[in-house]
Amino acid sequence: MDFYAAKAQLEEAERKRTLRFDEERQARIAAGKGSMLDNLIEKTYPRHKDMYRAAHRVVRDVYKGWYYRKVKSLVQRALRGYGNIDLWNLDSYLDGWLPLALRELARIHVGYPAVVYDHYGNELYKLDYETTDEDSKDCSAIWEQTLERMALGFDAHKVLSEHSWSMDTEAEQELRRIFKEGMLLLMHNFDALWD
Image (cartoon, rainbow, N blue to C red):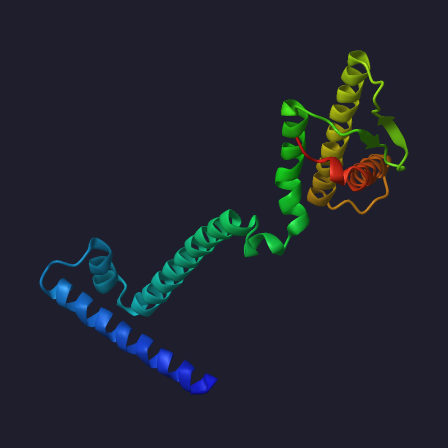
């Protein structure tokens, strides 16, 4: 069966279903069991019956389609970590949850990496066998600050994407600088995102 034959078959089934729906509605109205909306449309606006049916179909199909897409996306997120609905704007999806995850990691972390890099790729600190508890606390604080700066980079991107600024203002330049710094920190410390 080709595309056009399948399309014709579906249109014929829809036409039959619509006729059956009209006949059932007419029978309900004749028996006095029609809904208030059915009676109102039949008596007051007989020429708008087709518009009512079309609007009913659109609302039904849109609502069912929206509900189906949301449930499908939830299942996909549970199975693979993202849904098809997230892919059309992946940067916005990451902006929504990654800063929260980075801040939570900074808040609850038990360990921290042996080496943390700045946004240029230079070592901010490196632990060795002679590290004292005092040095360890400093390393922990530096790691928390680094995670916060990564999260701020994503926040800056979110603000930039929400406001379509066309001017090259000082505020926009600062947000772009923060975003770039956050992404470079993420790149250089990507292997250290563990707890």
